[in-house]
Image (cartoon, rainbow, N blue to C red; front, side, top):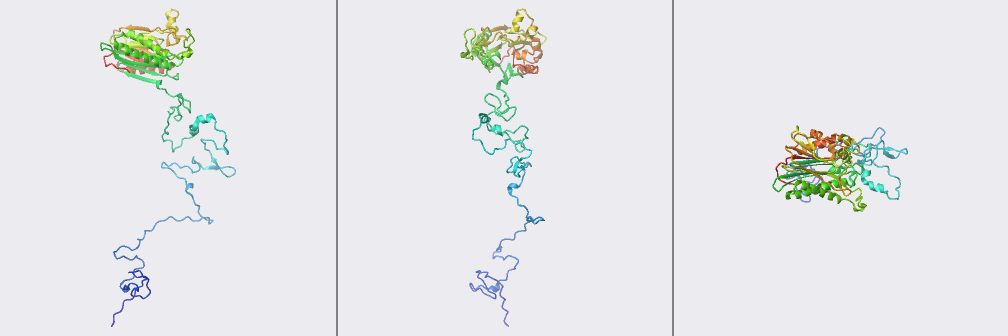
Amino acid sequence: MMSQMPQPTALSRCPSCAEPLEAGDRFCGACGHDLSAVPAPPRDEPAAAVDGAASGPPAAPPVDWPAAPETDSSDVPAPVHAAADIRGTDSGGSELPHPEQPDGVPAAPRADGTAGRPAGVRFDRPPEPDAYPLAPPSAGDRAAGPAATAAPAPGTAADPRTADLPAPPSAGKTCVACRSGQVDTDGYCENCGHAQPRERDHMEQELGAVAAVTDRGLRHHRNEDAFAVSSTALPDGSPAVVAIVCDGVSSATRPDEASLAASRAASESLMAALPLGTHPQTALHEAIVAASEAVNALADPSTDQGDHAPHVNAPACTIVGAVVTPALLIVGWIGDSRAYWVPADRTSMPARLTEDDSWAAQMVAAGLMDETQAYADERAHAITGWLGADAYELEPHTASFKPDRPGVVIVCTDGLWNYAETAAELAAIVPADAAERPLHSARVLVGHALDGGGHDNVTVAVLPFPAPAQGAGSA
């Protein structure tokens, strides 16, 4: 009995050469491959390759796709949204602005149905006109610049998306009042007009055994006072400490320049003379003369109207200075700035060391008024001596003292002594540790004047006596 021949495999192509096959073929007509030896592959699984790798891509897992939009009850297709129509939020949760509405508020329709400006929103700029004029912008518009249009309108809430961001860098200074406008070369804000603090509005300096503080005060628009503190060594090696205080005459031109020039010139003169052995009283006299020459040099020669009125309204200032050594206390002055002596032992009497060049002082000296009456008069602060090209004559006053006990010298402008006129009143507000903490004491005295009203610039220098032994230097 013959063995039963294997049934042909239902293949559509030869597994060896991929030649198309016909039904009932047991051998490939192209390559002779025995088709009966190859079982038919399952219909629901991919065929396995010889090396065991899948011959086709693996089946992907099912994907949970969202359902497609359905039509509504009226068979209208669901609306299609463009990307620009979708409103989003930033990382902080704030709503992002609409692409065509920078402020993020949808436009309210006009009466004709077209889109208009957002309702209830205040804009930084006026609506743009339908036609632009041909004329160039006015000079005022050009001066205002882009900053004028970019600043938020008054009452407009800050944008929460940019409120915490730092201001963009600018080449100029930013106003300390509105914190947005730029400061012009004159020191005023271009946005709100606020005068900016100047470098000299409040200055402090401490140099070992001397310290000084100056402040603009609460009423003046600038500080017209100036000071200079320094120290050096005398030929025998003992220390000499110097303080110069100047008060610009407000009725004159450029009083701030006058006081600064005078204080610097006087200090430089003393620093040059004292190490050479010049007596401190002589050195202080020469320093006041040098200060006068520095102020005279500021005058405008074009205003000279002859010998009787040279350089009318020229820059002018007062001056007071003190030199403290281990044994001597020397003061010099012109005008109504003062020097006071305050002993460390407050049971001892304090004293005023200078006499004012003023109308009030003349009335007292002539016996026409007592000091209380004279300084209560509205003419009290009219000075009769000053530094300046229009001064009648230069008469520096100097005085030398030999205190028999330690204490401090207070050198100041009338911005302080207006609030503590007598020596006793001033001594009452000088801290007990003034000799050990001169800068602190100067701050306290300036603060007293500001608390009293600060009607004038106020400058105070504090010098302990005797001058403590220390290395020489200058500032």
